[in-house]
Image (cartoon, rainbow, N blue to C red; front, side, top):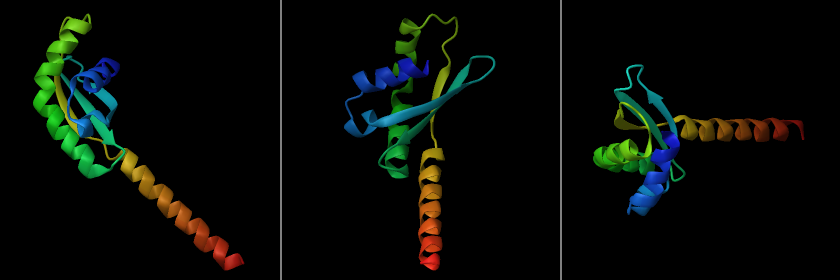
Length: 108
């Protein structure tokens, strides 16, 4: 489902900012009634949140497209949400780099 949703976003969305969003992960409820799709963006949190807002607007269209592309008895209601893990990873990397530089500077 995630792969089909990402392909649809790339081919059907006209907004370049939203098309550059990455659909990172999908969590489907056990009863298959809802799927939460997590979104990241290489331009950061602001761009990701803007993409989430746009994707939630077009979610019913995507749901209909998925119904025709996938062989599922029930196509879940789609909810898009911001995934902070990529941004958090960048922050951790920056902190580790800074710590390495500071530690390397003390020994010199």
